[in-house]
Amino acid sequence: MSVLRTADPWRDTDVIDARAPRTNQAIVGVLSLVAFATGWWAILALLAAQLLIGLRFGRQYCLPCLLYFNVIQPRFGEGPIEDSRPPRFANMVGVVFLGAATAAHAAGFSAIGWGLGLIVATLALLAATTGLCVGCEMYKIGARLRGIRAGRITRVDLSDIDVARGEGELVVQFTHPLCTDCHKLERELRSSGSRVVMVDVSRRPELARKYGVALVPTAVALGPGGIVTRRIA
Image (tube, rainbow, N blue to C red; front, side, top):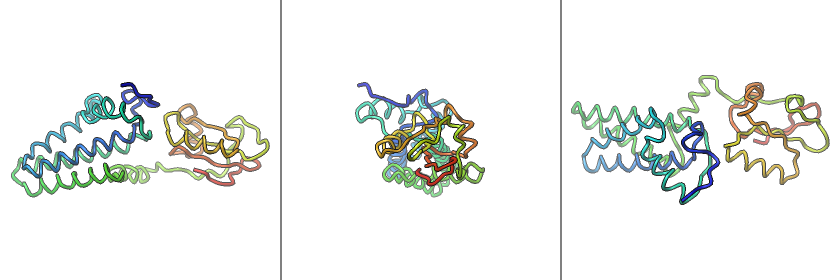
């Protein structure tokens, strides 16, 4: 069964269908609970190995990814497209915890091993069922600490976007062709009657850097002289 995709799962690795990480989290969470219930701590080692292989060699070697993109997505369609870096970092955190749990069991510290395994199960199932990914939030906090944060746009030079001020509200939207929320926002803005200028950050990265755009969609309304009158997104 074919599926209409805006992002190829094997080539467009800077983004990912948001449902794919949640499928992976559900599998990791359930199998971690199975390991605890049965006492088969080797399952934790297998989960750690599978996550590590996927991180090292790509999604083609990630079994939950293959399940989602080859079986689930063709039946239910593509979900929202998001930045792949936060869930990738969450997988790294999972490898650390599952690896530590495996080492603890191998060394005879079963209580520590099961404690770490249950932490993984709890966080993975929380992410799968609610969308609250603790590892992803850790990535975002780390990015802010490293100085990667959105700048406050107060004025846009109209020569940068090659447009005259004209009549009516002018909205500048920074976008990416694989961003689901960007397309939705553009439709909403145009249906409301706004004059919209799109800036593709994949083609104009210098403008993203100039205006401190760290996240898309970012959209601002401009007044005379390119002064920002309100931030829309």
